[in-house]
Length: 75
Image (cartoon, rainbow, N blue to C red):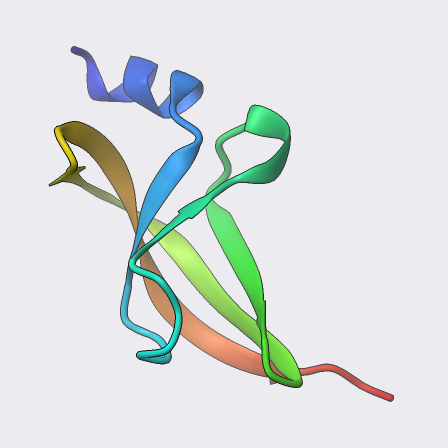
């Protein structure tokens, strides 16, 4: 299957790096692929950017997002 086509239909992504307590895969909301993903974690957000890689997880090829940086949520 063409990787660019896969990226438009796949809603699960593989996460690489970041806090060990976060899962290694996550589902994107809204069924749309993006170049950046951020997850709420503790009192902040963990930011990931899309790579050109794919990883096989449970028999499915998932696009890989690599951890980039953390931000804190202001009160």
